[in-house]
Length: 368
Image 1 (spheres, rainbow, N blue to C red):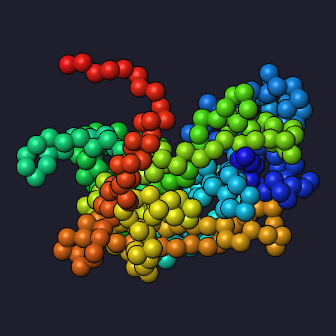
Image 2: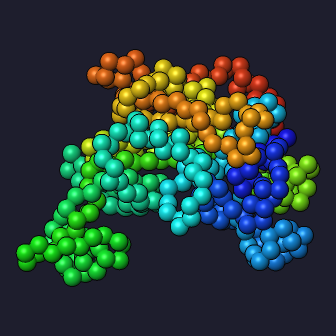
Image 3: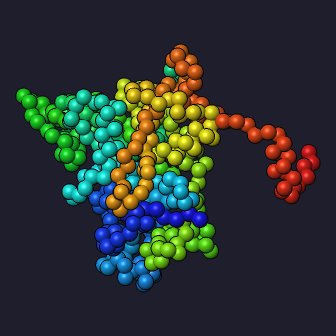
């Protein structure tokens, strides 16, 4: 049965007073801020006003997010990360805590190599626009990027005003509101740090959990509650392998193409167990794309490595592999490309269909 491996950043099999104190604050050591449930798990929040026993563990709080970072599906196997903050979080929080994601950041810079230190980060960048394709058809682009990292360039306010369709005065106000640097040169105002090249699209893909069973208390909020109150008795949800693969495959090629079109780079951060699942369930064998240089599609896979008593109760991911290659093998000198991720790994024998049908009652007869 699945168990929570890390709760509010701390290993449950190495729980100590420091972990308990951290838990009482619902604190995420990777964000260096209070846990936000991964930014997309608000339905799993715990209302302490209706949970008096749990409320005693969180003095002064009414609502907390379920701080489940990772799950151990089976003993002896690698944990599965289920919170994107566990893998990487890029945001100034105002605190100066330990950086448990230094290795991840170093590897990003290693393979991106932007050749400048003047970089800024934007999170949850939404773009919903219409554009005209090469064959003069109107197409729509509707995606959200986890992070965009870019450099800067000195740009006239009048040019930015034309870009956003606002007056120069309104553009200056927006620049000041969003923390940009304005400078007057002669009769014109300039934005000294308007976004510019280089560009990195950074996407984080961690595993989804199954819905869980309310009766068995394997829903993620129930699992979190039980792990805090009765750690030895709790059960966790499972991993929805198919859903996480489907979410990634629906965006992998598109966002990689966008990075190329912008003369930048798209980099996907995943966990090594997810990389293994992709290799084992699709026609794409990631091991054949191990690389030291970037290409059209780029994936950084991180892992826990050997988990033993040498680690502290907060684990920094130290092991990584970089997979990179063309979108398609055509004219690239490769036997295959990342487009193979949408192809079936191996079709099941027809006999297995007959077996599945025989073990299930028909629901109807079909009459035309």
